[in-house]
Length: 79
Image (cartoon, rainbow, N blue to C red; front, side):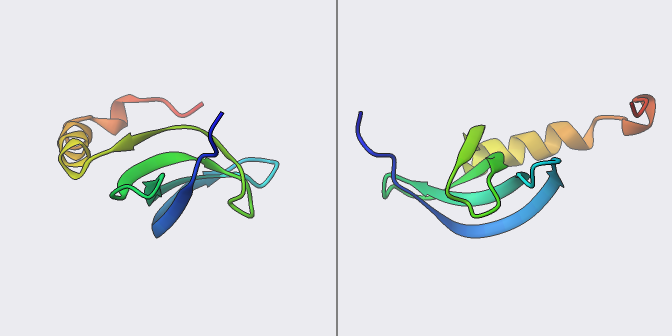
């Protein structure tokens, strides 16, 4: 299997952290030296390892933003 190359070109924000120190982050990431895309996934504390995640183009992120803006978060109970 070919080596996966990645570079976090911009750290946008951290959504949370688990007990082992991994953080769920939104970043701009260049995968295999391609144009950076918005990326949401968990990262190890030193960013050497990652969990499964999703990548989004700017248009997809804008669509997600519109969808999230329509959600009534007050209707959800926190667990």
